[in-house]
Length: 273
Image (cartoon, rainbow, N blue to C red; front, side):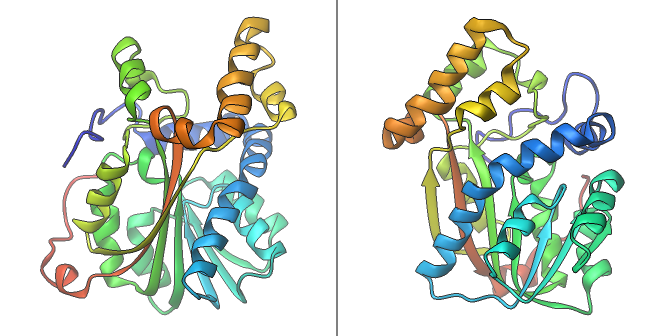
């Protein structure tokens, strides 16, 4: 499948999904704040690709919605009329139901979307920073064949770039702090999508950067040296050297797709998760 299939499990024995679920259970408030801080840049990428392609979705489903930070931001911008969401974490969905009562949110496995939302037709499905947590992202993508939708938009971190590959040789990726088990470069990500039922419509790569306050929030307990390093790698360098940073070190890639009807007709839908 490509170089992104580097690790199928974390060294702890947890799957990427279980790692994220335990994160919500153990530190929900911190996760709420963390996802809120990154939602604006992710929503910017979504809205830019939609505007660029003249798309105005009425109904949106977000798979792996977490605590609903992206949906909340899209609602604030008035992007769509109706919103649906699914996440494996009961704690995350309980927070969505409490804070976003007009979002139809459910607890469930994202490969079961057709069972849970089969009566709905969606103008847009959003899958933001989910695929890197899945041992078998192909199975999820192919499961969408049984769901009615027009456009699919996915975003992942590009961590298998030049310096990322060097870093991967020096560190154990099985201990990734965010529970990533897939590590993508641009071509790997596009190949994953196109081989599993997606026709690529448009793409956008950007260098995400954090505010000083967010870096303090995320790394305040790591000492001054680590704080300075993160200020350089997650604030100054991506903010002021964004093009080069996104090419060689770290980037987020957002891809807009349509359903490849012919491939979905012949693609097998089963396989281990």
